[in-house]
Length: 81
Image (cartoon, rainbow, N blue to C red; front, side, top):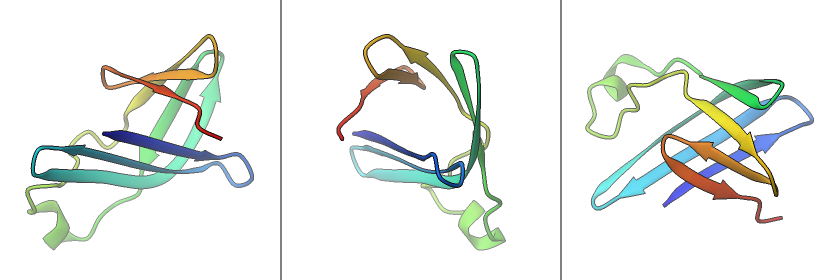
């Protein structure tokens, strides 16, 4: 399951991804340019970087689609609230 929460008030986000026994994600800031949302994950402490759930791609890109949908890392996300 993939979840992405974009907060318009302060341009921050929370991203989480769960598959089998792996839980990963990050939080940080985002900016939108046309139909693309650029995410920048906040730096993590060194021990976290060694964990199996560490998100290596620290700058994921999301594409805004019609109907309040976003494509992120191959997953199509839809608005839930």
